Length: 337
Ligand code: AMP
Ligand code: MG
Image (cartoon, helix red, strand yellow):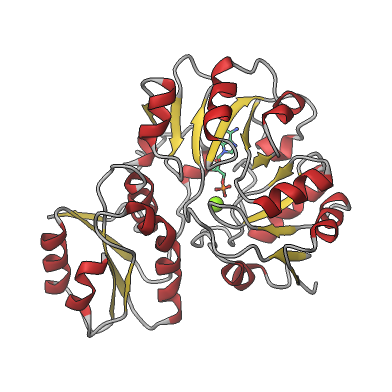
């Protein structure tokens, strides 16, 4: 298959690909997604094939606004509408009870479905023109870092999908925050582009799923099936170093081998001028780190490094999501200093 590059002017052509059951790379504010008609089980099945994604890992449905919720979900709590008013379009996915119209392949057989309204004018226009909810996971091959620009998505998907719409680099850079609204208390299933603090301001206290900050024990199942898989990992093994910036940079410098790559904050880039290094933004700016973390993880696959060390932000704001992506890339191989 020849993968076409589309521009933001090609809304009709993009929508037609979705309507006829094809696969389309779509820009969003979080990461690029791999979209298909979310009501067409065969089209959705092709997403799993193109990504090499395990069948038990459900997809999120993307819609142009809260007025599409009723079509796909039932027993929608008032809190869902309040969150949609506060944060949609935006990097928030809500887990809600699903209706029959949503195919099993989208939800991996669960009786719930993840719903999101992405904050990207091009993709909102494409979904509205297609007239169907769009099922879309991140546009990477399964296990790889998520794509935050069209070129990264093409690296993973060239020849496997019908087209990619180039909507520019992603403004947020990490995937959506996922909150489960089907339990008695709201529960954070994935830290993402909407900070936990903002969610709690709107909802009150939110329980945090253990899978976000720690590895799962044998036999433990996360509520978001995707959280159990090795993810975001470059080819070389990653070690995450947590603690104050000066200490973590010092630890990494003391452990550099002949072919070690380093992911660090801007302030420390000069400490590592003899090895492949990717800085991800100032230590105190987790929003910028979120925009750059996947690019940094991807970068090292084009080098000959055999090990990667990463400095890690604290849990405030988007730091929780950045730290989660780094720790998952490291298979939770973490050194505290
Ligand atoms: P991706 O879009 O590739 O970032 O993956 C979507 C994430 O949403 C995965 O971690 C899924 O496990 C999670 N997810 C999707 N639908 C549900 C659901 N109904 N319940 C819990 N988690 C979900
Ligand atoms: Mg993904």
